[in-house]
Length: 320
Image 1: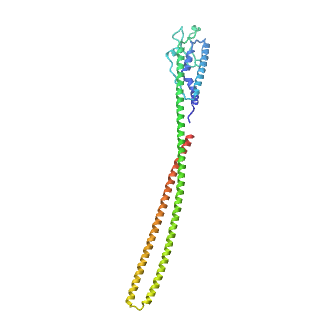
Image 2: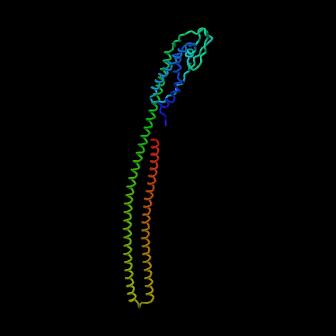
């Protein structure tokens, strides 16, 4: 989780206030030449510097309320003029120099000769306007940097929202496709059930017709056999007295005819059985094709369901 720019700025503000060139400039503006009996000048100017530092901190806080990360301001090295302003010389004894540190109250100051303890007026700074212009330029740079970072943050938020909207639209489309696929599968299953029922009814009708034909044919064959037997009996009784050869010949002819008839009947029965087997194989093939189509549709639906679950998981993670 990204930290807010104000939080980052507040965490770095104390370090910035210690390292900015603003504090050094304020101290340079309020410095005076010191003597051991003029400590009150130092205290008064130090208080002025503290007030100016507080005012500058207030300005920086107001500019930092735009929720933009700010880089810590780099401490600019002091110019030659500022260094010279921090060096204090004794007018009477030029060999003895006094250096004003960053915190002059805490550090000790070398005492000059007692014969030269005279009140000296503070040196007025002539480059105050230049320092003020430099300070204003730094403030403008900070404002421009904050505006740029605000624009980048706004653009990132816009891109994130656009991506989330696109993902939501994609998931809605996938759900819609899933519902349409389910409806198509239901319709196809209903059609297949109707076709299966029709095929079963047709098959039952065909089997009934085939059984009826078989029964009729068997009855006809039995009647024919009975008639032939009766006729043969009558012929045998009538021609009983014929010669043995003629009787044998007739008997052989009759047996041959019966074998041929039985062979034809067997051929017809085999042909009918082959037709029934072919019909059964066609029915089994159709059922197998229907089952394979159902399995393929179920697998494709399952893969789409997995893809939708993955997309929903990713969307939940993005929303988190």
